[in-house]
Amino acid sequence: ALMLRREISSTYILLLALLTVLIIDPLSPLSLGFWLSFSAVAIIIFSLSGRLAIRTAHIAKLWQLGRLQGVIFVGLLPLMFILFHQFSVVSPLANLVAVPIMSIIIVPMTLLASSLLFIFEPLALLLFTLLKWPIDALFWYLEQLSQLPQSYYFLSEISLTTTILAFIACFWLLMPKGWPGRWLGMVLLLPAIMNSAMSNESDKIPAGDVILTVLDVGQGLSTIIRTQNHSLLYDTGDKFSPGFNMSDMVSIPYLRLKGIHEIDKLVLSHSDRDHAGSYVELNQLTIKEVISGEAEKIKRKYQGYLAKSSAAIKQCYQGQYWQWDGVKFEILSPVAKQLKNKNHKANNQSCVILVTTQSQQQILLTGDIEKTIEKQLIKNYPQLKADILIVPHHGSKTSSSMAFLKHINPEIAVFSYGYRNRFRHPADKVVRRYKQKDIKLLNTTNGAIEFKQDLDSPSWLIEQYRLENEYFWHRTAEYL
Image (cartoon, rainbow, N blue to C red; front, top):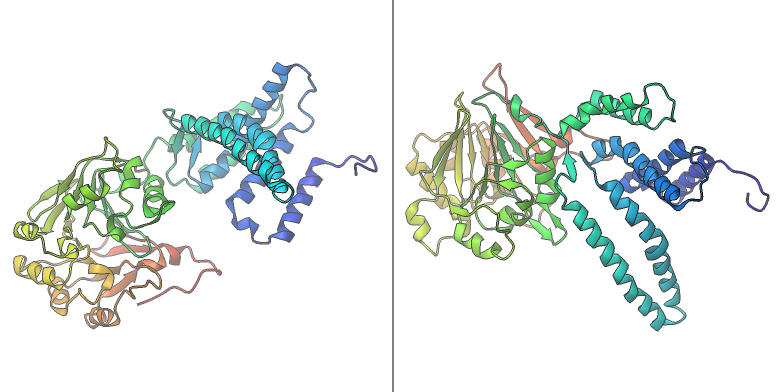
């Protein structure tokens, strides 16, 4: 087109680029970057093509650059709401610096250095070394922005109506000057923006009731219990690598989605990594109280990583009791003499909690207890029953004795384990025991499981995430 001196519309170039990307990588639409990149360019074309006056003054150019970032910020807001349930008010300032540095300095120098590797390696290595300075400076700047108060906001679940209004609002705001009522788009954005300052379902839980969510954290356990005004997190799941942990990937996004920004009580059942491995990463939330069956061991293990503002870790023990919004919480184990036994297995130090709602529905959280503690619970609590049992030790053969199942007599048992895990949890003979008792079996390999109390009956309303949101490309659901 340049050779023939023909003008080509920006829209045509964008569509050609889109087609090229899809031909080279047909799966690229599965990437968030695909949607963000093409959406940003489409927004720029829609908003600024033919509207930016040609000015030579430096101040005018800076104004146009700032306006460009503002346009991208407004245009991408609906996608931020849908994809991330959050938005950053400092992102225009971040892009204002990051985009020029990346496009003018970092990317060209990286390409040049990569090319020189095959021609003159010492010069290439020198360029790579010099690149450290702009990269470090950029990351320092971005970190300072992220630490500004109220620099970003999280949204809980938003309705389809609110989402549609957000799209209309942003479209309206990006129209040219003179468009009737252009700034009324701000009014349409208010429902989504106000959402960031409000909780979602917490205020909808009746007093005396709970919502129980067993999260899918792979091979591990993480459970959230919410009452009308409080929330308890039982275990965090594992930390598989420095950049991949279950708090960042599962627990925190879920809590923010539900409009919960502080945890009233964090219970780390014991110190095993698949139960407490993501504890440190939870510090980005406000945690009022932390208790554990192995408090001292966890203190030693994470002492160097915890912020000074972190809540002190206290020992949980039999007899502890509290009540939230008409819901009773009672610690059944470990017992005092058990804590003094240094040879006791970590699994058997697990903090066992019985939750009782106002309608006398009961939930038993067991951690990784084994048959020894099961016998102890039977002896110490002759009347102990539970409607929902979080299966001990992921269904290991060391737990879930028939005597324990007969005594607890649960209506529902939840197995939390990783799909095709290396421990082969749950053990076949354990699953058979539950089936012999006609207990309804659920497992987290089908995604998070949420239990709500049915207000019209004593039963539970159950939602299994993968089954409720199943697509044809998903593997077949796994039933026990």
